[in-house]
Amino acid sequence: MDFTVSEKMQAVISMMDEFVDRELIPMEPEVATKTFAEMEPELEKKRDMVKKMELWAPNHPVEYGGMGLSLTEHALVSECLGRSPLGHYVFNCQAPDAGNIEILHLHGTEEQKKRWLVPLVEGRIRSCFSMTEVELPGSNPLLLDTTAVKDGDHYVINGHKWYSTAADGAAFSIVMAVTNPEAPPYLRASMIIVPTDTPGFNLVRNIPVMGHAGDGYFSHGEILFQDCRVPVENLLGPEGHGFVIAQERLGPGRIHHCMRWLGICRRAFDLMCHRAANRPMGNDKTLAHKQIVQAWVAECAAQIQAARAMVLYAAWKMDTLGQKEARDEISGIKFFVANTMEMVVDRALQVHGGLGMTDDTPLAFFYRHERAARIYDGADEVHKVSMGRRILSRYENRTVR
Image 1: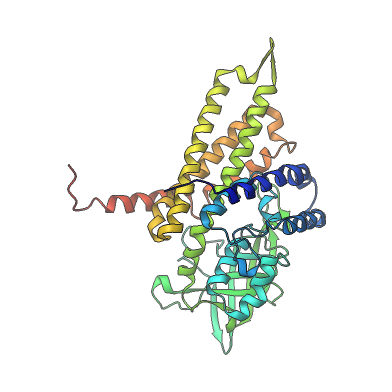
Image 2: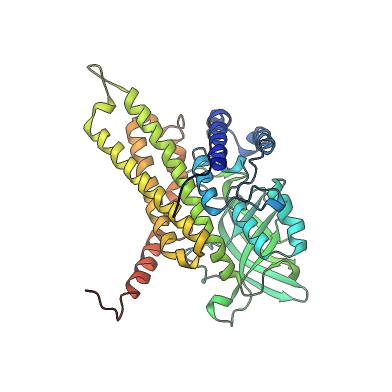
């Protein structure tokens, strides 16, 4: 293992860091006061700047206009961009589009790639991903009530989904639905492209998250499919392979999320240390003189360093050995990094006192929106149990001295 960062990647990260500091962080107060629609014209200007800098779509295929970075390289990029809530969107490597691009690249037909993949990588449209259902556990993609029944040369989709991130304004959704109810559990569901202007695709609402519903890209939609008819050629990959494709999508996606969370850790840590070093407490002393604050800083620094090493190792293992060989590492980083981020943001907010509860810093935004990190893409408890079960199975009928 060699995690040495190449000169090329050092230059890329340096340019991105500077762009985030100069162009995006000054825009952050608008996130709390303006709608996405109001911010979009200015965000488009920033996106054009990124394209001219040739830093556009870092993890997407070169043949479609991306930079074609490896998973390990993109992990470094994701950490950099994660420092701002605007980072991934402006550089066009945001979820759920990033995962949908991967699916379309690997499993899309030439017509699907032409119609959906190309404009998605170019940033001309957005998309969403509809798997989680209202009445069923989101951590188990085998349990789905949404159905897609063949009727001639069409699928008729009926079901109820929620937490479809960025559905508001998306051009299409990739929908997970049961197509083969009598098949074995892992072969029952399929993924189908559904244009959002299709009759029967109903965006019920943008779900309020801790009081903030959001709009546009910064939203999570509840969707009702009512006799929604789409052509059978909108099927992604073979029928019944939805679960397999979902696993291909979620593995790299967890690396992306974890490194984005580490970017949030970096930002929160910097804010915490600056606040502690400059907040007067009387007698010519600052918060930084308090031993409890010093202990918090040390603990956060150590956890961030450990989390970062874990994620880079998981990304390296996926790049070199494949997703199956990296299952334990992916499960481990999912719950470890999510909890590290929650701790760092919470400590940073505490050091800021009342200011931390306001939207004058990004800490309240991180606190509201990133608590879900321990839930989505598989709840912490699910990852811990599955990882523990796999580890223990290796000790069955084995002699240990």
